[in-house]
Amino acid sequence: LQPDISLETHITDIVNVFGYEQLEQVILVGHSYGGVVITGVADRIPERIAQLVYLDALVPHDGQSIATMLAPEVLAQLVAVVDQMGEGWKLPHIPDAGKPADVRLGFHPLKTGMQPVTLQNPAALALPRTFIYCTQDKELMVMGSLIIQAAAHARRDPAWRYYELPTDHMPMDNMPQTLAALFDEIADGRELGAG
Image 1 (cartoon, rainbow, N blue to C red):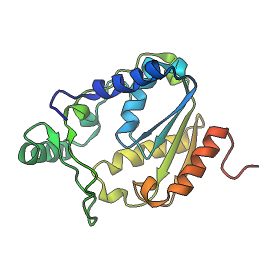
Image 2: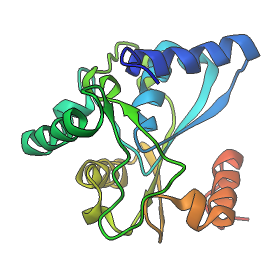
Image 3: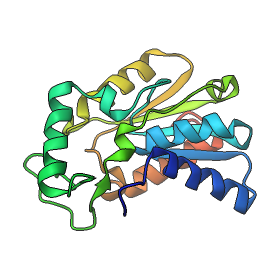
Image 4: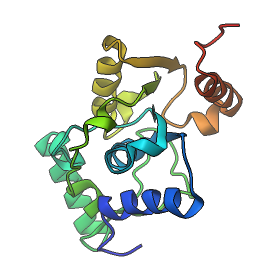
């Protein structure tokens, strides 16, 4: 954890894993902020990706950063928290309203949310995409409205596969078996429950 870690750092990390491990035809899943990362990865190496899965995640457009997606007053509040509690460069984990802090979640470099994603590869835009929307407690989340917007777009767009899970933003904690079964269905290319 250091001040110069950016979105570019995270995208490059994942692209390098593909190269070092010689991965092909990967179903790449991004949760929450990870949606921004997988979008950037897909722009770099779409030929190695079979599908993108956005798990209750942000879905940026070209030139967007989390900072530009957030309402200005929300961004100002986050920057104030970073200044007060994160030495001006790291955001502490902010638990959802009414929920206890998760001790496993720590600081996150602010620069990752300030850097825009650059999308220039038409092959990336043609990749199959799935959105898994977790239906509970979005009003408690700092970025809940952005995820609601992304889910609504995916639900309306016939180019996307769309699923919902009756849980909050952490389905891997709250319903891991159901989530794993859904991932299996997605990987098999079948609609959930289809034989």
